[in-house]
Amino acid sequence: MDIDLSADDLAFQADVENFLDSNAYKPGTDYMAWRSGWFAKAGEKGGWDVPKWPVDFGGPGWTPTQHFIWQKATATRQTPLDLPFGPVMLAPMLMQYGTKEQQERFLPDIRARRVNWCQGYSEPGAGSDLANLKTSAELSADGTHYTVNGTKIWTTAAHMADWMFCLTRTSSSGKKQDGITFLLFPMKQPGVEVKPIITLGGAHTVNMVHITDVKVPVENRIGQEGKGWSVAKGLLQHERTGIAGISNSIVALEKLKARAEGVKKGTGTLLDEPGLRTKIAELEIDLMAAEYTELRSLAAAASGQAPGPASSILKLKGTDIQQRIQKLTMQAGGLFAAAWGGKKHGPSFARDGMSGYLASRAYTIYGGASEVQKDVIAKNVLGIAGKKGKSD
Ligand SMILES: Cc1cc2nc3c(=O)[nH]c(=O)nc-3n(C[C@H](O)[C@H](O)[C@H](O)COP(=O)(O)OP(=O)(O)OC[C@H]3O[C@@H](n4cnc5c(N)ncnc54)[C@H](O)[C@@H]3O)c2cc1C
Image (cartoon, protein in one colour):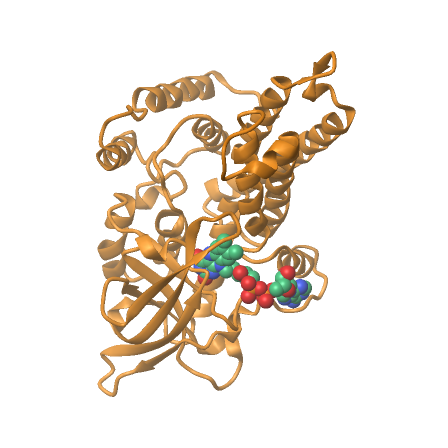
C-alpha cells in the first residue's frame, strides 16, 4: 500500500532511516552493549524507544502515518531483540491500573529493557477458557502479602525472564472472572521452577512454570484484589495488535518473491508458476486490507484509545497471512524443504522454510486461538452473541 507522505512525513522517514542505518549492529561487537545503547539513543530522539507509549509517559506522540513509517523502516532493518511482554503488554496496564509508586518502580526498567518479563496467564486447564485458572493467591492474615501456588504453561521466555506478571485466583465464589487478581513477582527465587517445553520446530521458547509457596507483597498487586480480569483483558488487546506482524509480513512476502525469482524453472523462474503467482496475489490483496485495519488501529492509538476488540481482527487476519506466507515459502523449497535440520540441499532458503513453517503453526494459538478471536469479533465488533473464551 502506498500512502501519500507529506514533506514533513518524508523528512521524518529520512530521519528514521538515517537513525536505523547509523545505529545498526556491527558484527563482532558486544550485542548486549549495542542493544542497551540503541534503546538509550532511541530514547534521546524523543520516545523512539517506546513508540506506542503516551506522551505523558515519554512516548513520541506520533501520528498514525509516523507509526506506519517507523514500522516499515524497522521491518526491513535490524533492530535489537525486544520481547513485547514488558514494553508493549505490561507497561500500558501499569499506566492504566498501576499506582504512581508502581509506575515509578517498574516503568523505567521496562523502558531501558533492563528487566525482562514473562506472561503467566495460561495453565494446563485454562487456555481459551482463561477465567478457569486455578493458581491460587492467599492473602496473609496481616494483609501484607499473598502466597501463590500453581502451575503456568506455555510461558514464553520464562527461562530468560526476571519477573512474571501472573493471573491468580483469590476467590472461588461467584463468577469465575471476579476472583482473579493480577500480581507481579521475580522469577529468580525459591519456589519458581521453570521447565523447558521443546516445540514442533525444535526450539526452546516456551516453558512450564511451577510456583510453590511464593510470597508476593501486596504492593505488587496491579489493580484491586478480584479485579484482575479487566487488567488481563486490556493487556491481551495490546498483545494481539502486536502479534499481527503486518509490516513483517510485507517484508516476508517480498523476500519470498525474490527467492522464487532466483529459482530456475523450465525457461523461466519459480515465480512464473501460475499457482504460486495466484497465491502471492491473494496474499498481497489480504495484506493491503490488513494494513488499512492496522492504520485504523494506529489512528486510535495515536488519539489515546486502547486497541479495543478490533485487535482481534488484526490478530486473526495477521496470523493467517503470516502462516500462508510461511507455508508458501516452505512449499517453494519443494522436496528440499524436507531436509531441514540436516545438510543443506537445493535452494538456500529451503531449510529455513520448513522451520519457519513449523514455528508458524503456533501463531493462530498464542494470544488467544483463532476460533476465540472469531467469537470476540462476533460478540464485541459485530454485536452477535457469542460463547465466552480467552479474553472477551
Ligand atoms: C508458542 C506458544 C506460546 C505461548 N506463550 C504464552 C505465554 O507466554 N503466556 C501464556 O500465558 N500463554 C501462552 N501461550 C498459551 C496460549 O495463549 C494458549 O495455548 C491458547 O490460549 C489456547 O489455549 P489451549 O492451548 O489451552 O487450547 P484450548 O483452549 O484447549 O483450545 C483447543 C482448541 O479448541 C478451540 N476452542 C477453545 N474454546 C473454543 C470456543 N469457545 N469456541 C470454538 N473453539 C474453541 C481452540 O481454538 C483450539 O483450537 C502460548 C502458546 C503457544 C502455542
